[in-house]
Image (cartoon, rainbow, N blue to C red; front, side, top):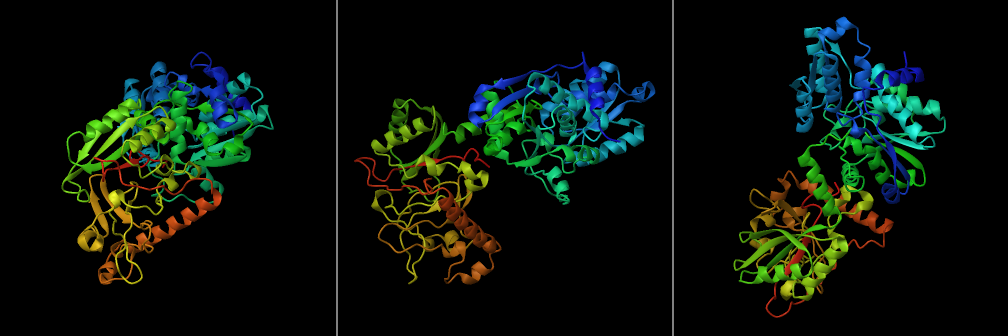
Length: 581
């Protein structure tokens, strides 16, 4: 038994008058951003803010009276449960919904508001589905599968019918894949109406269930992870949906998390509409693979808009960080009156807004008579941020990192955001050399310390590893420094000018020294060595592929003007509020 085009036409007739006939509109701004001709189907305008109403209602309308009287049950991460519970309540059918523990609060609350009995159980859909099956047998209910059901697939296929009515010359349909119900129904309808239309599946990289089945690989039981696209976070694609969709799909693309976030932010800022993570999957595909869709007429589906408000606020704030509109400047200097006032005055004169100021006098790598404070500012754009940094430098607060090195490399996604930003040889602030690494004769040589995710300041006298047991490989935190923002590994950077090449701290990367026996007992030593090799390869590959990109920071920290000697400014961005990964 398979899905036919006549089944989808029959579903369309049943659904008329029960659901919204949502618009499919051309987006000029998104077309300019992505390079494709973008048409957007706003399924988030349904009453339950998701397309799932279509399949659920089509199933309910075909139940026998006696079966409907006993009730139905389903397992869902939210959208299917809301559509099923809403229309079941309209039709007077009892409904029970089993939801995973990680389901957003807004979906749980809205499902209960529709009158459904909600059971929270399982870490993911598969566990919740097993619980629903058990309850179904105990209570003699009818299980309404969220995707692996031909009636549900037929209802979802009506989305493609409406899209091709509004834009009959669409060339590509990037469609999210979770369990496969939507793409099975839409592909059946689209391929019947237009043989040459391309159907592209879109999956989160953490849950490539359809891709794994195509390749004959079983996903690990403990696979997956935490994804913002929880609506399509399914470990096992449906057998029926796979059988229907596989012959009709031209390609399947895997999408990393940052692109889902960017899609949500673009829908909010450009289209002034709310999309959840899975709802932004089609747009995320255009952002992640622009060459694949460039110049083509693409139909995108906002499959749902049920996103937790706190999560939406976090996504929008992180997007400001990516665009360099929110940065954090760190000032380190003497603990004396007027320093913060001077910095605040300069920032205010440049038209930037100070969001937050945090002081820290207890960090061990700050002088006893010194202080450091972070000033988080909001600017108009990246250019404005650079202007503020330049103004601070001109007034006596030299910067150590340019805006480019603080930002993650968008070209290669979130993984590159975690790599180390190498620094050019520079004289430490105030002309005081730091100590980091030994030369071949075993003597400690000056250098600049760099922390993962946060560029470090120049070290002063007494900051060498011999003065710090943790950096020397002793104590419970070998090779690490405990800071206010957490424990960060100290890693190697370039030495100061005029000195021999610095080597890794013996307590960090396994260099030779008197503490070799302690290092052999360190369980993290192999992991750190592998991390070093991966970082070297990434820096080499980045330099070969994009030699024009400024991968190394200009850290010339000359003596500052009178009254501000020894004060350093640093930029933390991306990894502070959230990187591209």
